Amino acid sequence: MSSCDNCSSKAACNGKNKNECNFVLPKYGGIKHIVGVMSGKGGVGKSTVTGILAVKLKNAGYKVGVLDGDITGPSMPRFFGINDKRADIVQVGGEQEVQFLPVETSMGIKVISLNLLTEKEEQPVIWRGPMITGVLKQMYSDTKWEELDYLLIDMPPGTGDVALTIMQQFPLEGVVIVSTPQDMVSMIVKKVVIMAEEMDINIIGVVENMSYVKCSSCGENIRLFSKKSAKEQAQYLGLKLLEEMPINSELVESMENGGAERYIEYCSEYDELLNNFEVALK
Image (cartoon, rainbow, N blue to C red):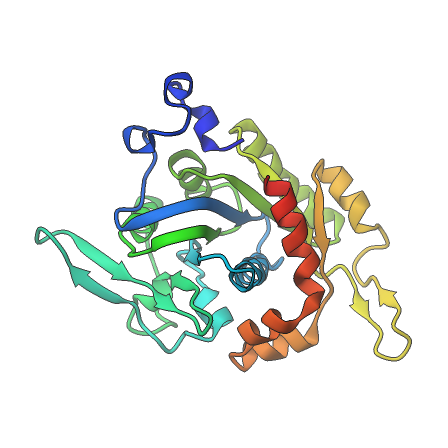
């Protein structure tokens, strides 16, 4: 299932003539799979899950891009340690047409984020919804992605303008939901699940982040936030569990040092997430 299932011309098109549909499409390249990473709640680790998936997909041999869709709270440049770089903007065609050249990580993952387009990363974006969604669509359509196997979209929390725009106007193949093991968080995340279902968006599965912390002495998994298992939380959400991820201080330290990409590349702890993601997407 994909966003094409919403199209009234699906029977005649069969998903092969996307240039004739109402989707926003990239002008400078082709993208095989577009996947959103979302949650109803902030602070659950959507950007972390997006980054881990991107690195593992790239390490598996795929061509990968990341669109930082959280316009007012972008964090992907920091995750990849490229926050000191800036994306180039070049003029093409007419005077009003520009092309964004994404910043590539050390592994070659192409990233575009508003924080790569502003003079300083701390510069706030004080915009209303229409301008935010307009910039989001331009960052997606006007970036020189070239040919990608996967474009991952790190989405802001909630069910507002950005989520609606991506679900209605981008050719999503599906979304990954991120949650944490707390009843209050699960209740808020459930809102996003219901939203996706009502809009006929394929939900690939749920990642439970911060599920536990591993004791360095005895190796026991200690569940800090809830005694409920990740499977129980996934059942409440009505979703396939892709992975339960621990609180990982080494990953946090690697992100603070700008080395998250290299750490994830060689960390087998996240291999199962990639395997389950690929299986669920088929």
